[in-house]
Length: 284
Image (tube, rainbow, N blue to C red; front, side):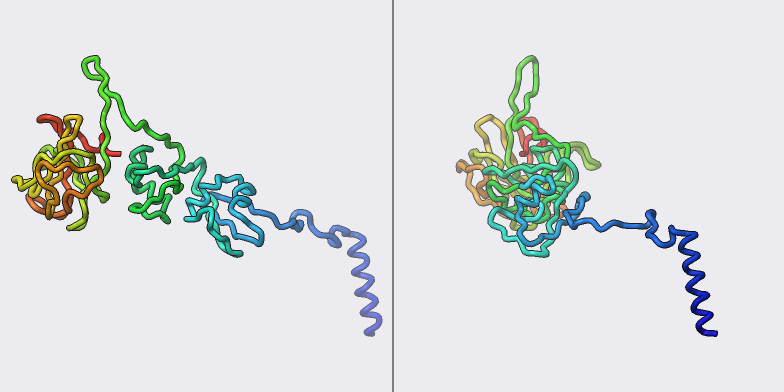
């Protein structure tokens, strides 16, 4: 009985295969061919795993990406050593580009020069220290932005007036802008900071006032060669004397909350005669 059963099973199988040959071969619909391992197609914000023999230059060429962009995104430089298995971020979004830091550049001035928000720029450059940018360092710039001119021209009564630019006196969160608010017209720009943080001269000039003013608290006013003045208020202490000449970037006071204020910050104004102007249009 056992031999007859085995023979019957074999005959049934042979007949099944001969009638339905497709069952004896792989189904093309589900068949996945074996492909030689290669670099995977990268998607935005994807990562490349470093393999033996890889270099930054080779990775940039293989993936058709900007070398400086890869270096900046990953906090690398020409002397960086890659490790096998290391993850390299290979995309920050389409059409991103880089800005090479020049002397005097800050994260804030770069953001202003490209017309982007500071938060957006810092989000693309999380590995960078905003307070310590190195000359030649690559900063990733958001897609679709163009560098703005360093000076702007305004027409007034038929004359072209070249607008001067100032360096940021303090790096921090802007808590109140120039213009109307509930309490009245705000003639300057408020920048939050910790008490004691240095306040820098936005441009070279001569100290025309240093002392205490009602509402403003401890205040420093600088007179500049173009006839404009810059004012720094609410300081915890002042570090210059009247008549003293100061350089751009020189520490002239420290952040405080003197005068009428709800917390430590710098109130910064730009004036000419009896008129004030929006500091954000002058800062770079």
